[in-house]
Length: 89
Image (cartoon, rainbow, N blue to C red; front, side):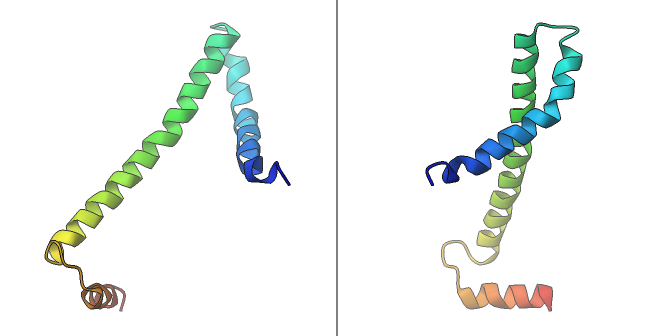
């Protein structure tokens, strides 16, 4: 099916439109529909990108700390496995 790879994105867009429609109607009282739609799109993108950047930053920081802890350039799988076993039991 040609549409199947894009179906997830289309359903996500429909869900986002459904969730933001009440805000669109409410904000149209104060601004034009074009400005309101643009501001809601920007708000939705920032609301998605900001947590994504924070999570990527935390993961990168954790990876950097793990590299420093295990001696820089050489990472031995046995060391990582023993560390995980020590932490998880």
